[in-house]
Image (cartoon, rainbow, N blue to C red; front, top):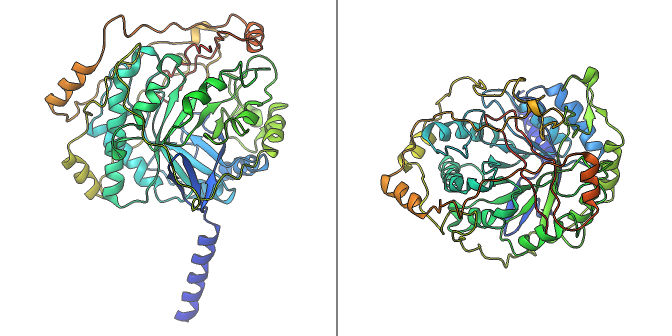
Length: 482
């Protein structure tokens, strides 16, 4: 009897191992899974402030629909680390879909206006990591999303990097597999390529593992040259880490054809970029979704394709099946970039000391496997009166719904030595000549934006964009395309 039960258990383990997706790893400037280069064909998947990875039946319905159009990744912005995610993670695993997940919670993200990196924030990030590290289809973690959301935001960059370094230390101390940790950046022309280079420069244990760019430059009948993609490609060539579009999919200038996907996976970009995540799966008032739900209630049953967007994306992705290189045959030839000096709107002068936590804090939390944080409560999530619906970019047809204020939520002081903070402060260029206030040029009408998309020169998109599941608005700044 015992041998019979053992045989059944052993067989079950073999079945589980056979069905599990291979974990994603980083080697040089590329992702790999199962020994082969990995490219993202993803969608953003979070239409409400609630954790979207807790309703197994809903996840199964969405995963099946996503799989039908060739989706292999989803991006999730916030979760409840205390919930049970086994059902949803299994549903997406069975559909061949990886999850790219933000580590922050509603009230623990790094805030541009008043940046901190505290023990409280670290503990919350650790809870999310503890919960999701167990899943093989966890593709990677985001340390933050558009923390820097305008031209004057670069002084918060050392806090982003400190968070990366401390979370890498925690991951190592816990003995978890080497899960990539990256950052998702707003597309601010004046900070290119300084931000991507700063986050990748210096020691590997303090640098990001991949870089995502939220870019909505390709609109309507745009082309590789006049969309700005040619410029993005030029700045990404030779980058030592995987880089991909962590949000894309402009919805102005006519029908959404998703032709930018052909460029991203085409011969001019495929050797540099690792794919893209289309914004977004869920239909909200901003009209970026590719599916709706019964009675227009998000996550209320089988997703209903929105046409022609759904079929357009499916058609484009159907013809995209990049092969890439094998991990064994690939060796990276790119070195980390030099840490940029202060110039223009970039205020960080070189490889400044980071406001990291004391190592004893990391060791203490890592050794305390029974530590529980307070129950998941979105303390500072915006209400419907301050942000329209729950999506991003926001619907700009009603200016009264658009808020541009920053959160001033206080946080406990980070445990950083005064000398380190003094050094950071002394290296920040804060004169009015070097940090300018960002102006947000909003196109007056969709038709004007559409007209601009077919011409050369400067193209300003009406894409101010808000993350209502965060405590601060994440803005889409004007994008200047030379």
